[in-house]
Length: 201
Ligand SMILES: [Zn+2]
Ligand SMILES: [Zn+2]
Ligand SMILES: [Zn+2]
Image (cartoon, rainbow, N blue to C red; front, side, top):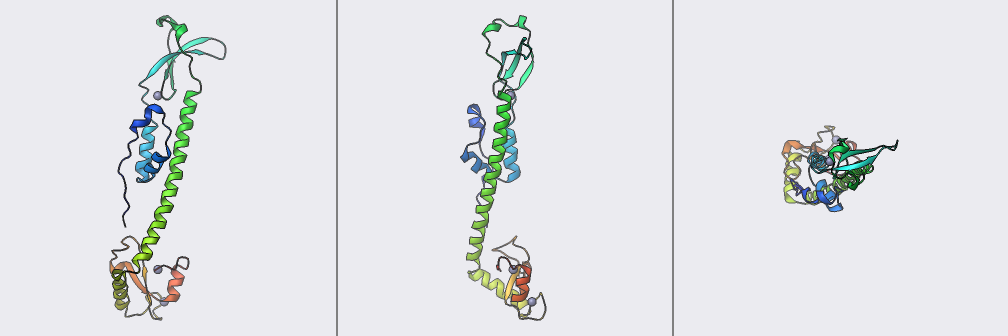
């Protein structure tokens, strides 16, 4: 079974109004391959500091200095000489909290993505098992099952003693399109031993 997967989520449009992930964006990212999703989030958390502004910064000791600050992520850059500034008193104040807020937002985004990925995984699992239950009712499955039992001459390939009654999956990789060597003929007792939890085929 295949799931519809987007290959890319366009996050670029929202950068100007903050980098916080909306619920919808988190869902979209969670539908991607996890590696790709984390890459895209990391790219969103990058800042090239293309918009810097000189700001007035009063240090703890009361001395006024002038620093450039990134308007997006709050990163501060080296000091600027007062003499090089036309109207230093007109400058806005350096935002001491901006960088911290940026990092907090990045952190929240990461947690949001993680939660959305978990939700997506759970719903995919549920979907998959629902599909699988349906598949076990199809003629295609019955044909494969019968062929596997026949191949083993209806003897359990687990214990070699009991009558084989079920086809057990060695792998679900090709579920729905199994090769016969993905399956083994097995008796109820052995099948219970192999996976008592699900009771699936
Ligand atoms: Zn920046
Ligand atoms: Zn057996
Ligand atoms: Zn099984």
